[in-house]
Length: 167
Picture (cartoon, rainbow, N blue to C red):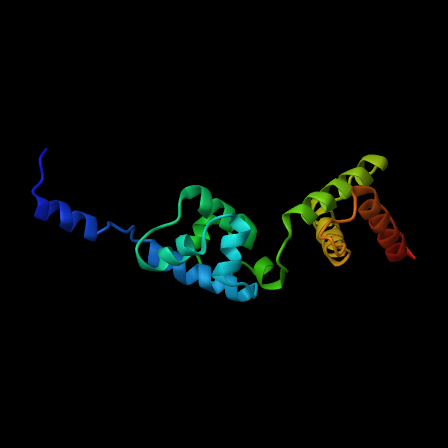
């Protein structure tokens, strides 16, 4: 199908923008504000340019991969970001601190190590609480060169914290 130069110019100018993008931007700003984070920080966290993130406000929409990454990073669902369901932030996000992916990996491995040493499997809520507590410790112990404490150190912290809680 041949288009006239005029039709071609109009179609390039009028990018079709999905209807959910305005609600996405509103909810993204809400979640970022709750985390005391800015769009520029978000772009670094998810590995895209700041121009791409700012483009979502003007003419484009994030990819599905970016939507899923943003939802995971901010502790919300993709459905919530897209405007489905309640307008309120999920309650867990309102109390959460920004998560460092590497620290979460160390914390999760430490909790897994601790659980595998025990014959008793804790409840899922207890496991989540242990990961969050260990994550916060791992982030607080980040070395000056940016490296994180190892899994063994994190597991030792958790053992001591759990022992202290028992006493």
